[in-house]
Image 1 (cartoon, rainbow, N blue to C red):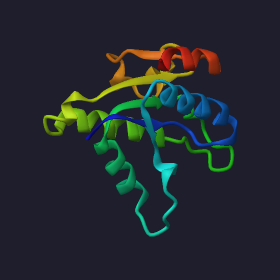
Image 2 (cartoon, rainbow, N blue to C red):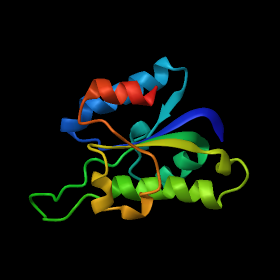
Image 3 (cartoon, one colour):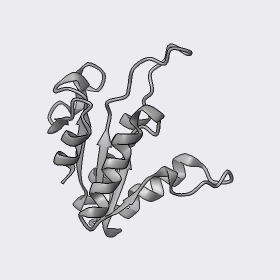
Image 4 (cartoon, one colour):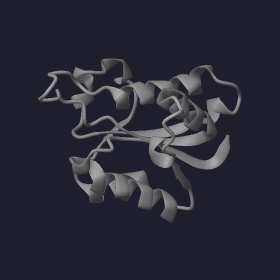
Length: 141
């Protein structure tokens, strides 16, 4: 595991791009290395396996679970971010000695909103960024 690597788990959508860039900037400026599923574009690689590998290599994680609304076209929610958060927490809980040292910050748009769709993490300290890039930066630091 790389001691200064940070797994970024957030939407990669155009409307979240400023937030994503702010997270990357803050991580780099703080002397850490950002990692995410976008770092390689290899069609022969299984995306979930790639995410598992990155999670296993990162001591830290930044997770934003704020984008879980229903997709207008399909009527289904997007649960990639909660799934990847679960993977990170599972690695911490069930992984070896190095994995147990994982630390992360979890974001949602507003306080306690996440309890409506992922109530099992109600005991975690979730940070609200109110969709404000500056507030996100301040809390990632």
